[in-house]
Length: 349
Image (cartoon, rainbow, N blue to C red; front, side, top):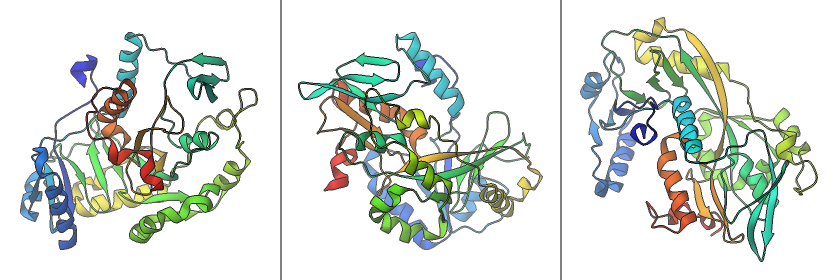
């Protein structure tokens, strides 16, 4: 990607390690390895002793883990800006602070979009609106199953830990990786705030299996989000103010408790992090599908509309391949991967 953009995206091939605390988790790792046996990956199961060699300083006696030496990390702020600049250099026009209100239709297919600044004519539209996608599609009579969760993240001040490798690590309750400035990005892995919104009552039953398996990591909350969502317009027109203008950005509050728990769990497993101090905290709203897979698919009911949403927290890592798949679907080229598992119709089969 750095070569393609001729820009630094912060990518470093550091390897990624996921630890396991039980034989059951190791069995899950083995099952995943079996499922990708034909992909020529260098992922392998590792022992507790190997984990100490891969990520020195760990004091937990893990059941083992799975390690991919060829994997790595990148910096979202660098990558997203570099991609935008490269797109502009290719002639792409990026318009900020301008909401799309509705689609224009002619002869039964998309012929453009109506924005708050006027109509833009086109033959194909890609809807990749994150949490907004479900609301936008609903006004077109197309159901999309996504609900919001809020993830909180912290970054430490630059930290020198003697002997600590560059490997990114995920344990059952934390994830951490080194930041380009020498600090560390840390999150409470799998622990989310789950705001109850009107859509929770409408489609929440599709998530029952996820709730049962992840209940201990879910922090349900009924608060301002419910009333805020309820007050937003449910109808889009080319004239009236849309919900996307009423609430232009979604900026959820940080859960400081989850962040401090993550740092505490990290220092218990890697005591060298006891001297870490929090420099920055933030939170983000994630659109989650019932099966955790994104929807990357043409919208059959609306010819000319292609959907790319529901990435369930994996949007940045998968974005280069996901973007290529979207482009293939729009242009009619041979898809980079089989698109069937990501089709919208799976949610309603």
